[in-house]
Length: 241
View 1 (tube, rainbow, N blue to C red):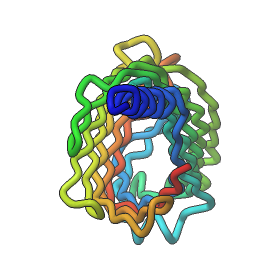
View 2: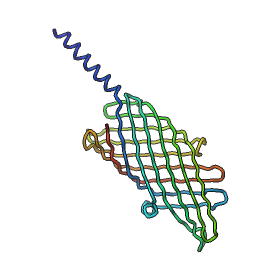
View 3: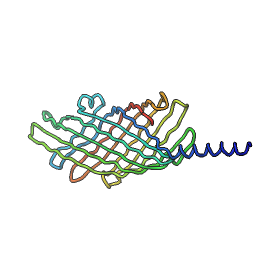
View 4: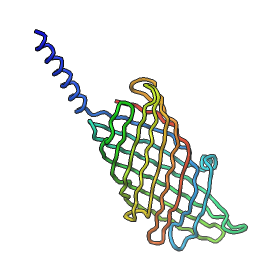
């Protein structure tokens, strides 16, 4: 009588593991990013180039709107990843003594990628992904003293390659490092970002995160130029389901 019981137990465990592997699991993370900004903005060839370097406190004073969200979904080793970033701000600089230049930038990026978990260990996982990032950028430059004004909107798609590493230190503490690189002259000349976070588990469904994010993009087309880098800390909350 022990053999049928043992077989039943093994089959039950196998069915449960298979069912778990076939189940989709997801997580959504709204987060606050507090970056500094540096770079050059030129809407058209007839407009002057606005070169700016601002701390987060400067950006906060000139920020019009911002929204950041990323999400992942998993089924066994299949990984789907998405991220939305939006920021709109106004800035100013000095073109010459007594002549100011005013700029406004609205940037939205939407990233979608899919990949495979190449390392799957109890306390360590590594995902390799490929996807694309859609950029929408609108820049305007005004020089009131000279009566100059220019506005340009650009939209492009960058292919990208990405990797995501997760390491669990304890049942409650973990770290995640994410990096991607793209553009390759298809959309922008080049773009890359790196994100690192330390995460704390409040319960099985809710995590809190603190980390750092760096993002760069270099784009030139039809004499328009957007060459910026943004770096700063972030805070987020993750809901798992």
